[in-house]
Length: 271
View (cartoon, rainbow, N blue to C red):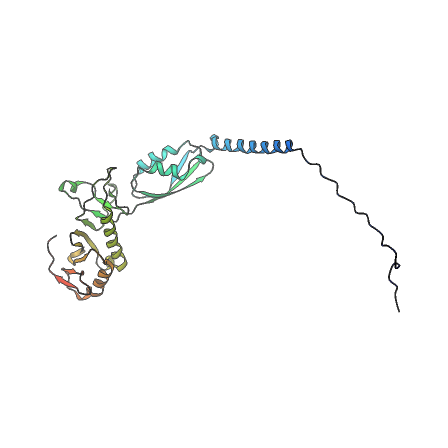
């Protein structure tokens, strides 16, 4: 059975009318400009209010834990931030306020709306006690070396630091009056301390003194266990050699580690 196709050959298909969407009326350019200016003015007004409103005036500054910084000095420095707009105080402002406090190394600032600032403090770590160069310094608070080379008075309110004592290095005041090791002295001292840590020497034989001499460094061990002469370079390799051989060495001797794979022992000379 055959079905005929709908429509007839030669007959035009009916046309369908399409309804056009109405054209939107465009706002005049002046109206557009006025709306934009109004929006900007509204935002500017809101921002101006936020930056000046008493609602956002700082009434409290909180700090995280700290140990070496003087509490009174810290509170006095942070008081300069009070009553300022919380949005106008940034990290640089806080850093400038705390710059005179010698133990503060770094900080982080956060806000708790509407009126509280929180300052998290990172302090310098004391590395060594520094022996005074003259007898007059013996009665002062202990001096300690921190990682940037400054020699600071250890806080009197804290127990004695119990650190190894650096002997034989001068730390003259710089242009600001702060005692400081020279760059070369600091680099060498930090290298020795790094070697002590890497080799685990302190765990096996705690250190009493780190002595700087013209020929290099000597490490005096606690309890009369001996003195290690490590010279000026290759501190880690030399201390590692001692750690390997120490069980076979008699205590109380001076152990010279400066000469290649050789270990020389002798009776210690007076400091």
